[in-house]
Image (cartoon, rainbow, N blue to C red):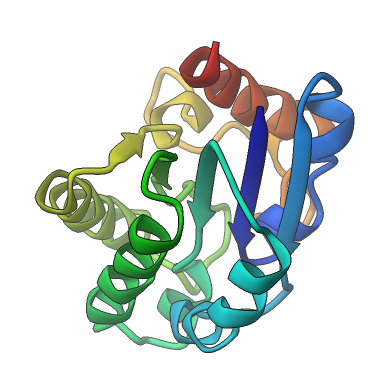
Length: 170
């Protein structure tokens, strides 16, 4: 199976090929990238990756960090492009993960995730709910899943996310 991971630093810093050794993995994550940044380099990604069976998108947290809440329009364009380029692929919109970072509200992340779920439903793609897997019993982000910065993931956090991906591609 050919898996394409695209998005921000959470994609870039993941060891996706190592986590999915039986698959052909394409990893297109860039630290600090916004939804619009991914949209602007989409043609290069789609030129490099001729075919994909699964496309996993994780992007939007950098938009929130910059107080940009209007990125759903650009996200819709990304989905349309991937659907056109890979018509037989399953496309997954990953929910944004919670953060342990004072400048981004987890309530805002939950609101955006509701928008992303609605967008996935409207566009006929899959929504991968990983957000809840990163919360403890009190509803707070599990500290062991994050690095000190409160945004990027520990190896344990990546194991949790990869497990959710594996459940959907098996």
